[in-house]
Amino acid sequence: MRQAGRYLPEYRALRAQAPSFLEFCYNPDLATEATLQPVQRFGFDAAILFSDILVVPDALGQRVSFETGEGPRLEPITDDSGLAALQDHLDLTRLAPVLETVRRVRAGLADDKALIGFCGAPWTVASYMVAGRGTPDQAPARVLAYQQPALFARLIDRLVAASVDWLGAQIEAGVDAVQIFDSWAGVLPAGEFEAWCEMPMQRIIAGLRARHPKIPVIAFPRGVGTRVATLAETLGADAIGVDTAADPFWLSRNLPRHVTVQGNLDPLALLAGGAALDRATDTILEAFAGRRHIFNLGHGILPPTPIAHVEQMLKRVRGF
Ligand code: CP3
Image (cartoon, rainbow, N blue to C red; front, side, top):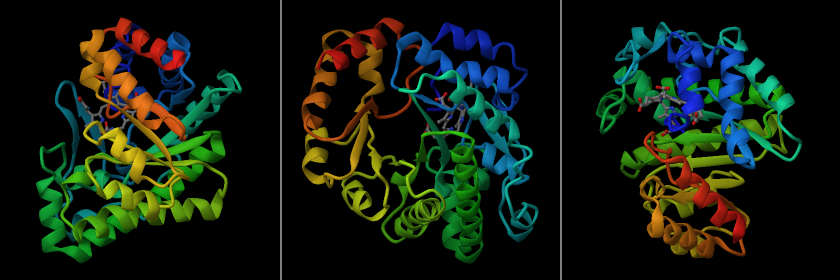
């Protein structure tokens, strides 16, 4: 996720070569290397494309920058004129370097390793587009959605179409599966949740299925509590990513069996290491034994995580 890589010295060395984070994402030499690094070091079963969810607003014409240590900055969209300034369609020329990265990574990966492409879900991406930055509670987008629902719906519609185009282009360039990150799905009350999280994700997945019926889709609606069981039925995703707070035994009992579960080790357990890490790893392995499961963290790996702890966890997972 967005913090991944930073715990690796080889990533930090590569990062130092790029003038900015976005130029890193748009540089196929550097982005290919960054995508492959974790697989080369640890032999993971899958690589996640090195890019960001905010390349979509950037390619819709809302220029994005990343301030070191402060996170993303965009010109906030607060009214009709802000929306009118966006392009109707994604500028795939601007994103061509990312598609070049996909082709190079796929060519450089062994056949038994998967490459995961991704985008942000409309709600999560819109929360940055409206606030112009990361916020603790996504209040600017939530208020805009209450005050100007028609305007907000048009923004979400634009993002649904852009996401289908963007994931479709990644699939055509060679990714083996796609993941949709709804990192801020958990803040919306019922009603708002269905309108801005559930339905847009459903529409993206249906749109993708129409073009690429066989591509595996992973949905990651973070922080939604027990609503994850409904989403596993309604979204139409093949797999559902689950966050750290969800009880793996509850999930295992309540999620439909045809849906693969991805998750959900606490990144802080990985950071802590020792016996606590072993216990946390075992709990997840035992809870999901006997069903389709992708072992993963419940959110991004934290930059100070020791490499030895990742090795300890992997050994335990592989030995299970
Ligand atoms: O993990 C990976 O390296 C794969 C690529 C990836 C990144 N971002 C790279 C990145 C993925 C899948 C993302 C997703 C992403 N980006 C999300 C959804 C998942 C999540 O983490 O909730 C979100 C909300 C973003 C937006 C974003 N990108 C923010 C808020 C930030 C700043 C974060 C911070 O703590 O400073 C980023 C930057 C970012 N994206 C980094 C990376 C490796 C760090 C950039 C750096 O300093 O090197």
